[in-house]
Length: 187
Figure 1 (cartoon, one colour):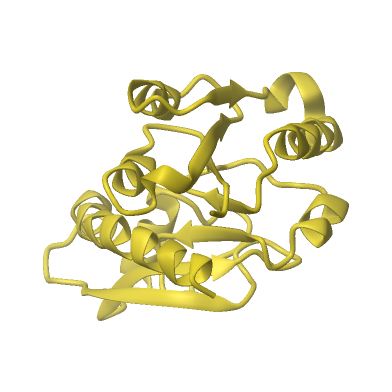
Figure 2 (cartoon, helix red, strand yellow; figure 1 turned 180 degrees about the horizontal axis):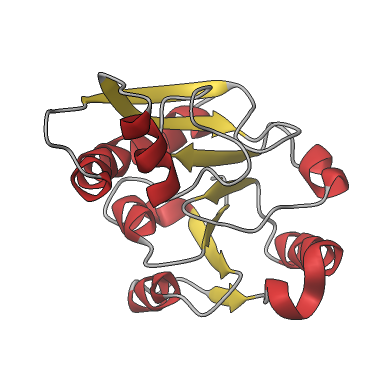
């Protein structure tokens, strides 16, 4: 069975969706780059956790520390579920094809540097888009690029705020991420 590491930086609701799915038994480790409620979710589910501070280690130190932890836990696949730190190019290259991310927009639109959380939903609304959604993709060389695995769409409705749109997109993320991870695990 493949061994997954799920990376979080916040509340971990996408992690919870994975814990509540058929993926749970494959989750060997949850990693965070800061104190996060996602770590508590993992501990409550009996999953080992590790916090590696981006502020303390810096970008290259963080990538080196993560590489060591991935080897120690014999991790096969990394799932970025709301993880905000950026890896070094070397780390990303070593994990190409073995690291996936969920993004709260229909990539390639509304991705890249600074496009996370409410910033994405504000940009979608400012562009007067008729739909938004979420994308699960393999990590590429930059930010929010790489081969798309699956997407789910939601309509943008009149009167939407970044918060109401975010809530609808997040609901789809919770369905899409477990389905996409299972798809990757099955090859």
